[in-house]
Length: 165
Image 1 (cartoon, rainbow, N blue to C red):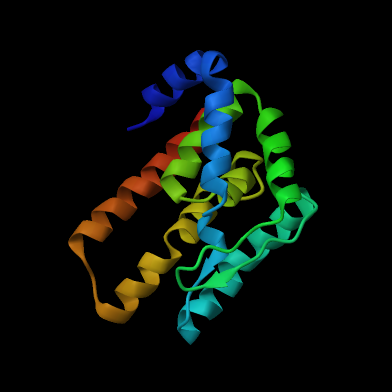
Image 2 (cartoon, rainbow, N blue to C red):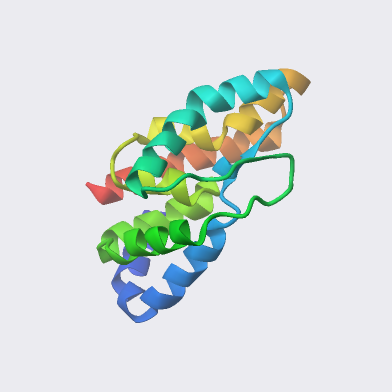
């Protein structure tokens, strides 16, 4: 679905690299992995799936990230923003294109970083990105629209992984 978009975006990226970097840094401030649930079952799943991703990211970016419960936006250390910028600026155009698309699809800069650097597969990225939706569906029942969106997300992550090969 997005393979052609990725190819076009990667070719044109050199012109807009600074804008894309700034956009991703703004997105980083509200990274999905910073927002934890309040329900015990959800928190246990987040610890299992998101915990290792956050641990990797904290080692990769040599910082500690602040997490929050609920919808309050946690304020991150300024150094972490500089380190994320350095990470982004050192991606190749192809990696940055994949990183941008993965970030948009997963709503997580940190998850996309692990994915683009091949620390996790598309299946693992999908599981992490759709953790809350999967928990909600197991708790409140299936939703056809969410199922369709999740199928598209999984396919998009597979295409991003293939693009990086």
